[in-house]
Image 1 (cartoon, rainbow, N blue to C red):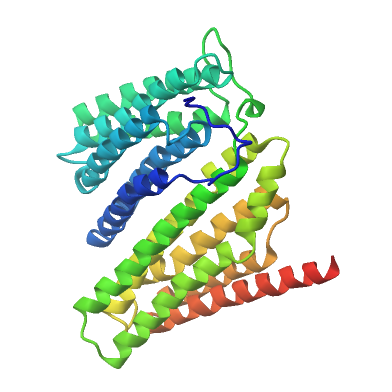
Image 2: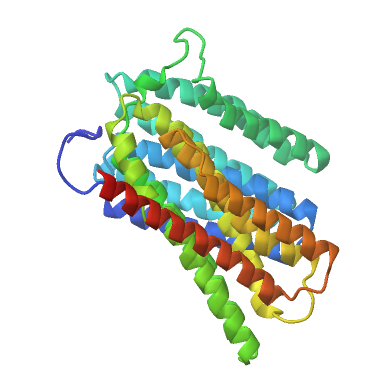
Length: 387
């Protein structure tokens, strides 16, 4: 039984064990949103951003791995189970990743990246992909030094070294993993199954949106069920629905078709899915924090943190989707850019004139998202009619 996937074979694009693996990252997203909510300061926001990027990178490289390697192969399945263990340790360490559990987080992250890549090097023996993953492993081993040393030193040294480590991890694919002796790879070497890559990223968006729904439900359960709270709950839930609509109604399937038919799917997989989905995931996490603040305190005047999360989250999400559509289709979405501008103006007004209640802010955000969703649906149907 070969560990390498046959992309031409018929069958499910995403294996059941991949879905099982994703359950760990439901917990990771919850940890990240709670970290931001527990300490709504710029320092905590920077930590949450950094840790989200690390968590995403651990999940994303696993997605690339299961694109190449069959998750039903016994060795790959055992590897995924080991990754689940390390990922749970990493997620559990999130609240104290810059404190007492820094080494736990660093060791778990390094074990995920280096351990998985070593297995892939074995699985791709005799295949052209092996050279690519030797380069990947080389760069992960370099960054591992900074992750572990930073965790050991702690304090300002940890911050500096971890930033270097993350820059190495994120920068390596951009420069195509230059490695001594074997050189650098080409995006044409990264011949992925585009449909699988698209579906995996769609599922992660669902995971993140699921966290926002859990937040709204849990906050409602703790709150006094008066009319204002129920209205805030309804608006926040509809906001999650609108985010889903913006991503999935037309763009998701069209983008999957585009990457599947591309002559360089590796490049699109790297740019559109590996990188451009990051602002969308961040936007959903920030929006979930805003939802909890709005439901908990729907009346009165909005605090600055409520304004920044309730409006900044959707703006970040739309910015990521704008970037994604530009990479895939080559055009900027004017409705999304207009919506981002409207959200920014609304945020500035709410901060300068602090009399706007949180419920009204959330309602304004929802209306803007609905307008974008309606425009998308109308535009797509118009294109279909013209064709």
